[in-house]
Image (cartoon, rainbow, N blue to C red; front, top):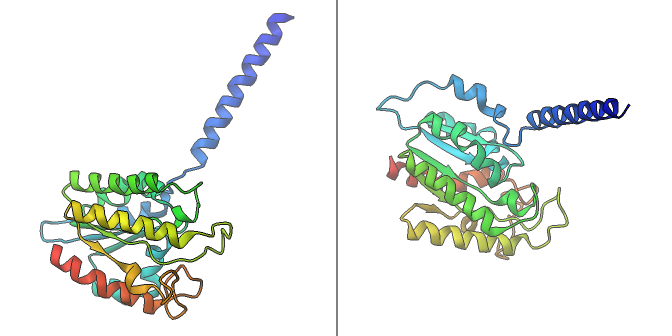
Length: 233
């Protein structure tokens, strides 16, 4: 009888272990599938090609949608933004969505969703370290890097409990800029060009929700990033 109970318990433990493993495999944190097909369909890079990858969240993801002409005029530009993602997820998929595409340049825009606490409580040190890790990986693969500021955002409609976003964004931006300067990495300040007169918010002329740019907002970003890209290429 006792032996039968132990056998039953062992079987239960094995079943639970398999269930947990299956659940872990089903929940894919980095969302590698988002660009898997698009990545596989990209032509192989030749010595003459000068591919540029834009790495980011929904702000980056929405760029080709709102300003398709910018990417048509620059067919070597590849958008790899995923809505809702934080720097933790960028770092996980950096090899699949950046390194394996063999770009000359990667543009990293990270921090908005970290501050918004999309994947847990915000920690500036962790977010900054994720950005530095991406830079290190890019450099190790001979890819030039452009770092950009987090865009202005006073609040997040999906996480209204975050009430001090501007202070956190300003602090992170200062740290990214200082790091870029110390390491001779180009830094593009979207924040300063897009922020309202209060120095904290994204104005209505550039955004409907105070977080995501409208076409006019993207135009401002394009005018800032384009000369830096051309200089690196």
